[in-house]
Image 1 (cartoon, rainbow, N blue to C red):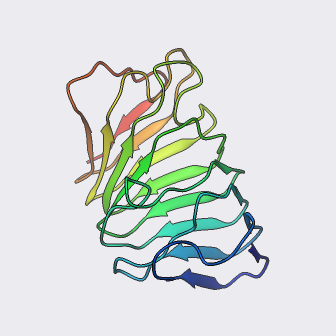
Image 2: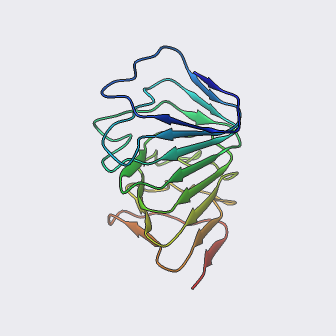
Length: 171
């Protein structure tokens, strides 16, 4: 699947991904779901120069749906009330924005971490980022630059997690 235009392409399929090959978002927006429980990108790798938007109301990338590694300088946004889970090392270097729902990070207790130090993380009103493992934001400087705006939340599950780099609290 290749998205080359500047428009929005909703991926609202039922069940498993029903196309073969990887996903290349060269421009425009690939929206996973339409505020329901449908929409699956499958487990193929995703090359992201445009935008990937989650707009589901259930768990995405958790036990029910998996997604392949995401690479590229694009933008990942969670607008749905779902939980988006990153569980491996993501070579993604763009910006992650959590406007609603939860971004759960369960990556390895090692360097590199779940999110690249080249990634910017922004948590807005209604969004939550949850650490579900140690060192998911890096185990050494420079770490992931993180901004938590008024109404956003940064939480953990009791395991040690480190915030290397810049943490900005607004509001």
